[in-house]
Image (cartoon, rainbow, N blue to C red; front, top):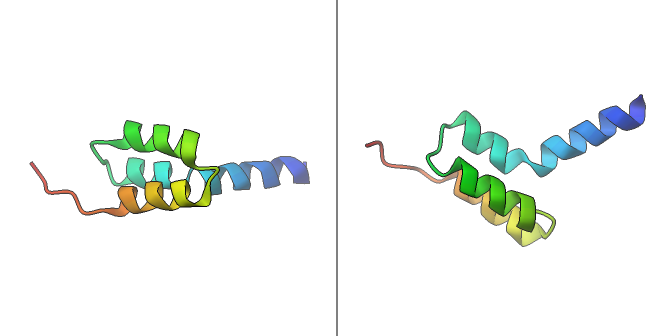
Length: 60
């Protein structure tokens, strides 16, 4: 059971940029998810996805 909780926490941390983008209702949430999924395992890819999800977006 403890292993499952740890796995879920690590997955949440891994996909944190995607979660942030979804909560902030970013228009490019799907693109952030794809970048996070395929490049998140590299530290620089994860940081780029996180910064992308936190960037200010002009309302339309």
